[in-house]
Image (cartoon, rainbow, N blue to C red; front, side, top):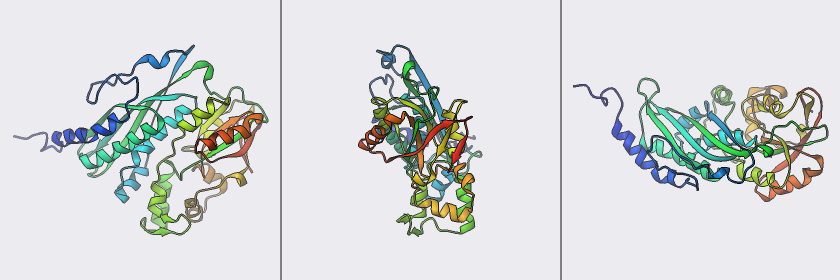
Length: 341
C-alpha cells in the first residue's frame, strides 16, 4: 500500500496547522463576517454598503517576492505575513478604499504547523492593524515543487469606497503638493538585488550594523508599513487628490500611476530621510540615483497629493495619527514624468 503520506503529503500536519492558526484568525473578525474558520467560502455581509450613494468594491492581490528567501535565511517567519497584508491593503488604499476582508494562500513543500502558525500570526496582525477580517485561505502542501522549509505566500483583499469618494488623480493640477509618508525600511521590493549585495559583500546577517543600531538581518526583514488607519483618518478631513504606493519600480514607476496625462511630479530629494540600511545598499551596489529610485522606496512608502492650501494641515493630521510625513515635492505641468532634483 502506498499512502498520500508516502507521497509527501501529511494531512495530519495540515489539520494541526489549521488548529494552530484558529485563534489568530478569529481575532481579526469584524462586524460583517458571516462564516467561521474552515468554511468552503468566506462570507461577508453587504451591510458595509449602507449609506453609500454608489458603493464600489476595490480588490487587490500581491505576494512578497524574494524577501521570503531572507526569512528562510534568518528562520524568522512572524513578520512575513504583515508584508503580505500590507502589499495588498496599501494598494487598494490608493483608490480610497477601506479594506473589508482578506484571504491568504500559503504553498509549501512540507507543512510545518509551527511555521504556518507564525506566518498566519503575522497575517492576522496585519489585518487587525488594517481593520479588515481574515475570512479564508489555503495552505497547500506540494512535495517536490517547493524545497522543505520553504514556502510562498500571497494575499487577496477587498475594500469598499463610495464612488464619489474614490481617489483617481483626475483633478490634479500644477501647484498641488506631494506628501511622503516614511517607510519602515526596504518594505517588500528589490530583494533579489539585496540578496546579491549580501552575497557580494559577504556580510553576516547576524552582524551588528552601527548605522542601523541593529543587525543587518533585523534591518532588512522589517515588515512593510501599513498606512490604512492614518490615511483613512486624513481622508475624513482632507480631499486627497492622488496617492501612490511605492513598491516595485520605486518612485519612477509608481508615482506616474496616480498622474493624468497633463501633469508631472517634481521631487525634492533633499527632503527625504532614508533609513540607515540604505547606506549599505547604496555603497555596495554603486547604483546611480535614478536606478536607486527606480528600484527601492528610498525611505518613502506612500505618496499623497493634496491641494496646496491643505498641505500643512495634512502633515499635522498624519502626525497626530502616528505618521512621519514630509512635503517632498509638487505637481507641475507635464506629461506624467518624474523629475528628481
